[in-house]
Image (cartoon, rainbow, N blue to C red; front, side, top):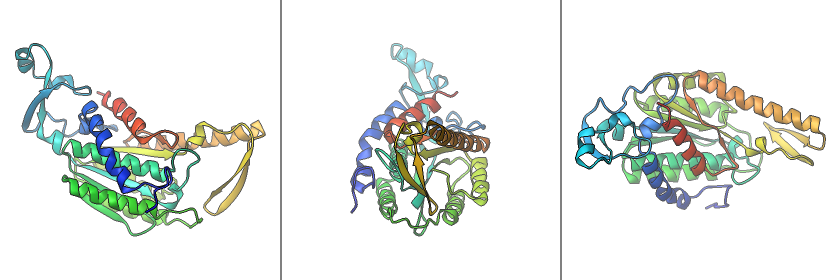
Length: 311
């Protein structure tokens, strides 16, 4: 199996995320509430369901869930009430593993960052006993699995994700993303329930008009988080030199010795990302851009901290 660091992921790496995500699940205990995003409040905020347990207050908990009677009996240390819906709400992730994601200038390729982020989100849901499912959009046949809860299901998802990731290459192959992404979004729509938490991980470069209509429908039906993955060179353009860039079969030589050209490239890249974020926000979903120049774990922790602080 391919296992070059930052170029491909392997099953051992994705399984090893169990440890780091367990600590994240403690720090950000409410995956469901942490992903309460977009312009609509949650239909299931936890207090409307069946009571499950009392446990100590953890960072990120809503103070409205504190049980003051138990807190008083325990000498003032806060305790909160936990409800079944908080644990059982399904998580469904769509991850882009098409050919254009096979790009990166430092640390990791976009395809690797997307796979790592998807795996850590699935582990977080697993630690919280939430059913989790996955849709993998790659260059081969569409892969999908409806949300389930057991560990064996999770390992099967990781195996499928590794296969899709390691099928990518640098041979300049054309991508089937324009055709595959709408198929993946339709499959996701068929699996999501009214209260499913959906996460879309992609660079969003090859989204056709049809794909964007489906994105709008996903966000309209349920709470959705978009994670646009971008290469970190956008924030670290070289001050001199040149390199060859290719996209869609077109090659161009980018020169950075002239500040005017450098500033023009940087400005276009930044405006494109801002326009993408605006489009995703307009659809009614939360947006958390991830850069290839930083680990998935660090960025996911910040995203959960930021989102969890929104009341």
